Image 1: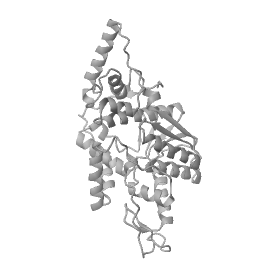
Image 2 (image 1 turned 180 degrees about the horizontal axis):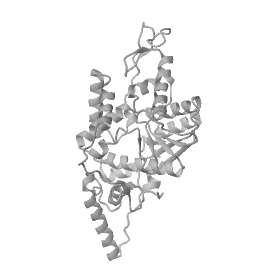
Image 3 (image 1 turned 180 degrees about the vertical axis):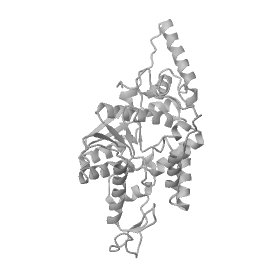
Image 4 (image 1 turned 90 degrees about the vertical axis):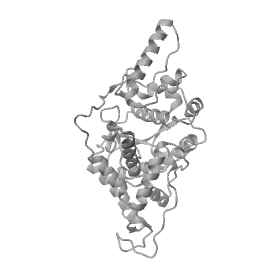
Length: 362
């Protein structure tokens, strides 16, 4: 949840020369390396590191149409700016556009989308907005009224992920880039360990995911620290939205985030060390991994007969919002219950039908 992250002004380094150029006065201390560095050199090394990640991992090919996931927060705003700059400077040959999701959160998403619209004009990148209401028939405000504040992040996360893929498919994108940074990935590694989620743990550090799905997703900020993104946005005076989502203050991820911040204060390289550990995890050959298939209802990638979004939507539309909430290993039972209800509806002539998950077929 990038919008609610640290926005404090970076601490200025005074009285020392930049350790990189040895000419200008140092303006800040890099959180990743603790080097005293001037603004100009910070801009250069920040952008060069991202460029090197892109080139070393062959993230893009010339001529590809790339959707930049844009929420208006600091990560996606810096991502849009840097991708636009690097695309021109290094002649990537990419056709970039902004893709935003309107979850329907009054007083939060409507305000952040105004920031995205200003970025559209400033960066000269076209913008496409897709909404939960159009895709699923529900807004997050309506979902929270139905289920309360507990588990609402489960609905939002599942719906948002699929909404981005559907928006990218609608705009005929070849790739989708997101602003997930090093802090986010380290948090995800810890969360998957705490949950015992072997399937996600084995792929959560991949810089490109979804290659077996509709749209591959890339993370150019995989090794970029959140604090450095804040510094870059601050010194560049970028226009971004910094308010935390009103429905997520008690999200489980927040506890992992605080733990990561504590580790970073004691040892800045701890974030990269966690990511490297995640990259080196090996799954035992005896571990049974879920087989990827497609959802029978909407065609989205799924390891079950119905994808998670369809199960959640099934519950909402039937007045059973807890239907799709639970561990992945229990979804076979949920799928069977959904099938039994559908069979019962057919026998009784009931017209109650769960809306298809999204209005776009894959």
